[in-house]
Image 1 (cartoon, helix red, strand yellow):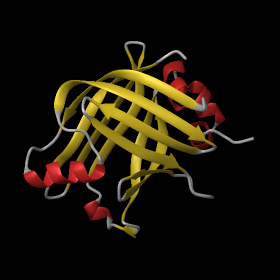
Image 2 (cartoon, one colour; image 1 turned 45 degrees about the vertical axis):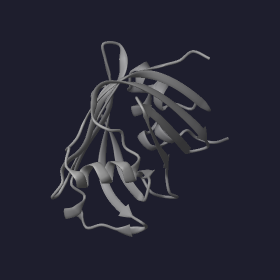
Image 3 (cartoon, rainbow, N blue to C red; image 1 turned 180 degrees about the vertical axis):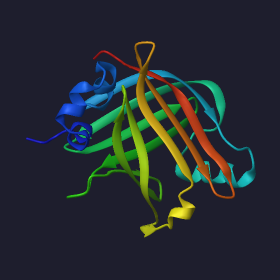
Length: 180
């Protein structure tokens, strides 16, 4: 029997204390479809636009329609997001013995420590590898990421600032599972 990624990393007691909407998005259902809206922001200069394109990140714009599909196989989760006109895909998993959640996004691998903060999951960046090479902490920048509940719906916020580039991307919005 496989163990779902988020419940395993957070621990049973913490997992059960989270709101149902958060557990529904990060649970063990083999395939989950959701839809919602997101506001996307980011620096408009050429290097930021290029890096967003390389990583498959969405272009800035308000109130973008968002569709999400999560496919789970054991602890591995493939997240395919469709922001307005751009597809963003990442793979989440864990590594044997590590307490971190790892997210592969294009050539980058981010390692997050997950913590409960009230009714939210706070994702804290602990490691960053690009093309398999670890980057020094000074180049990690600042990543703020939370999964929570707001107005009875699953709410997410991500804000990424990089040295010399400024805000690479920030997206904030809500999702609701689509009934099968």
